[in-house]
Image (cartoon, rainbow, N blue to C red; front, side):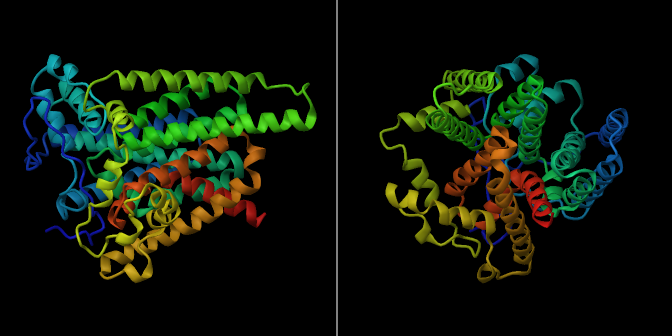
Length: 440
């Protein structure tokens, strides 16, 4: 029996291979062409350097430092502790290589969403390059380093260069973000596109340039492709934002009168979001299993839609990392009432009474930092959310929706440790902005 007391404490879903056979999780982890991997690492390093130099960004040294830190961490991971955080993860890279071995036609006929979407992207890369897990890791390291730049841009937009630089340094050295980057999984892929989408929304709110809005929608859709939970979080956040906007406009009309003018930008943005979202959802529903849209459709059309949730609640391993069973009630009403408590466990566990091993101390410190960031981010949105506009409100609601959705499907702090890292750059960004706002 596996022990869920380990920080990783989670297992990715094992899907059926497109050929219909159960995937073998014991693929030999082939390093492939080391030369190709080194070329990839060097090329992305130069690409970041040139990109930031051309844009005349003063943060180039921090981003390159973050890149080198992740390269060193990757080398230590591969040479000293290759099983760290990986032995229970879904075999993304082996699946990608297996599909690419079938040729171009097989790869493109295997296009899919959900966990296999990331494997499909890897298979496309392997149609061009020889097999090299180091090459794929170099892509992850590139995205992980650019997350540092994204955090800097968000924070500096509201608090200036100095605060943005400090936030970037924190992101560059935050252990769980480094760990998330050096493993071959979809984690940093999702984190990068979610963070980038929020950056573009911030840029859109400040400049009113619709190209940033289009970029944001694109990033949101890409981030949703490999994980149904992200898609549900986005839809929920859009729904609440839409209701909030209608309520605000109705309240304004009631107080000011029927002559209240509506922003053309707001109308166009709302219409675009609604159109793109509906089109994306309908397209997802029209695709076959095991796509994310099909999962949502089957969930909504089931006789007992909450049964899959209850099934997740019953997934306990008996380890020290498990959440208390009493916060997983098999009742719709109690399930809703317990969501705030589950969200607290998701964000801030392990609590001090849950620490039973040395490795748990790492998770405990991580949770304390997240508590600090969450408090300051909440202050920011509560005090200045309306002043910063609808884009910031949507980001706030996206984070809340994410916490609700993933807290429902999380049963131990190992899972929480991994999943909450997806929104950690946003918590760092707005937590630092909020902290700076309180000081000033």
